[in-house]
Image 1: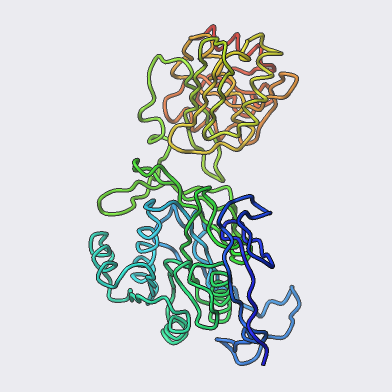
Image 2: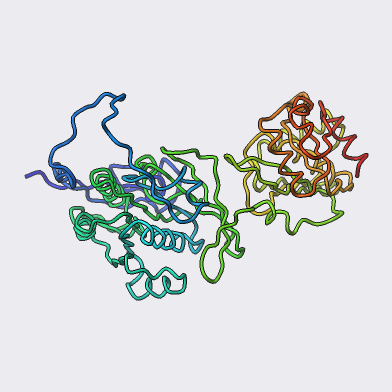
Length: 456
C-alpha cells in the first residue's frame, strides 16, 4: 500500500519544498516553512455526492438545461456585489480583517435566506453553539429554519450538508475545518486546499451555494494556498477601518457578475445596516474653506458615487520628501506630480505629499486623475477650491485632459447633491451640457489650474 508523503510548505506563500529551511526562497519570510504529511495516492478518489453518474458532454447551445434562479441574500448591497443574487451551486470565499464583521454579514445573509427560501446551515468552527446563538439574538437573526452546527471535522460536516436539504451553507471558517484523511494540522495549506476542493464538489453536485469565510494574512491577502482563490467562483473582501462604522464589500473575482460593484454598509449595535446613498455619507463631514479638498463623481460598477479626495503638500524641507497615498494608486500620483511640475510649473520635488480618499474608498479609474491633481494644486497654493465644484477627467503625460465614460451620469449625480459647477474634459462637455449644473470644459492641466484658482 502506498505510504503518505512528507513535504515542507511555506505557510505564507504556499511554496512546496523538499526540505526544511529557515527562510522561504520564494517569498523571503522567516520561520514560515512547516512540515506537512500528504495523503497517500488514491485517497482523494471519493464518491460523488449528487447523481450516481457524471453528466455526459452537452453542446454549449443546448437549451434543455434550465438555469436556476438566483437566491436573494436579503441585503441589496450584497446582491449588487454578487451580480444579482446568490447563484445555486456556487462556492464563494469571503475574506477580511479580524473583527471587521465577516461573521456578522454571513449570519445576517443566512437568516435572510432562511426567512425567504428555506433551511440554511451555519457551520461554526471557531465558536460554540451558545456563542453563535447569543450573537444571532443580538443581531435579530433567530429563525427556526437557521440551523447551527459547531463542528470542524469535514466528514461530519459532509453528512449534515448532503442529508439536510439546505438552501444555503455558511462555513466559518475554512481554516478551522480539517479532514481526517490528512495528517496535517487544521489551517495548514494541504488541509485548506483539500477541504475547499471537497466543498466545491458538494456545491456543484448538490446545487447548494456554499460561503467560505477565510482568514487574512498581515498583508491583507486570504491565508492559505493561492489556489484557494482560483478554486472558488467568487472572492469577496469585506473592508473598513475597525474603529469606524463604515464597511465596504467588494468582489475581486466573480464568475457570475462584475467585479466593479461595491456594497456599502454601516456597522451598528444590531449588526450591519445597508447604506443605499453612500454619496451623502462620504460627503457628510467634508470641511468648508479648506485647501486640498476636491469632490469627484466616481463610477463604481453601475453606481455613481461622490467621493472626497484630500491632498496635503508640505513646506519645502532639506530632507528627503515623503510620499504617502491612501485610496489611489501611488504610481498614478507620482505620474501626476511629474505632470504638474513639467506642465503646470509647480515644484513638488522638495515637499512632503500626502493623498487620501475619504471614507476608505479606493479610486482605481483614470477619471480620478484630474481631481487628485487639482487637490494637489489647491494644497500647494493654499487656495481652497469652490465648495460647489466637482472635478473629473483623465490626465495624460503631455498634460492633456482626456475624456472618460458616463460623463452625464457623473454630472447628474453631482447636481443632485447641490453642486453648481463641474470641471471636466472638453470632449465630455456635450454629453453633460444640460445635466443640471454649469460645466467648465478644459483641455489641459494649465487651463484647469487657471480656472480652479480663479474660482477659489
